[in-house]
Image (tube, rainbow, N blue to C red; front, side):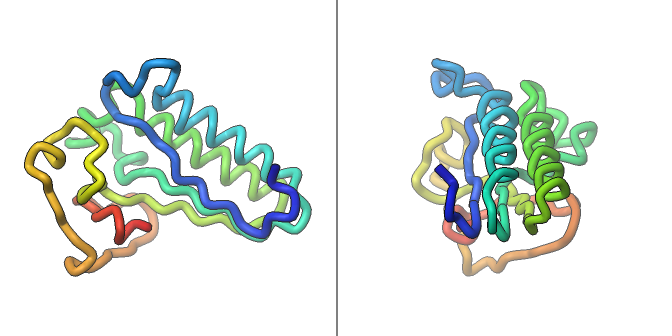
Length: 148
């Protein structure tokens, strides 16, 4: 399915806490770990692939700190970190470049998660600017359109 592809962008995920969206196996482990790992392993076999970009989340390296301790109660950040490692391993094995983007909590429509951002219709916005730093040191929200 990836033959002839020069770049792959992986932007998948599900809710951090159990909701009806987890029905049918749509859990963080299935999506952020297993599916991303499967895509990364498939990418290893694509001749000429130049880059893989993965969107994960702030906090994957800070699961013992607040507020990430709570966010990771059901393993979403651990699953995202495992997906990141699968991309890194595939890149090392195959020689393609990769970028891992760790946005904060996504806000702004469409409001797909049953959380405070949906309840309050939190907008945020690209007009607030975009901060970029290496590693996992940022904290805050990210408007969906700014992330895209």
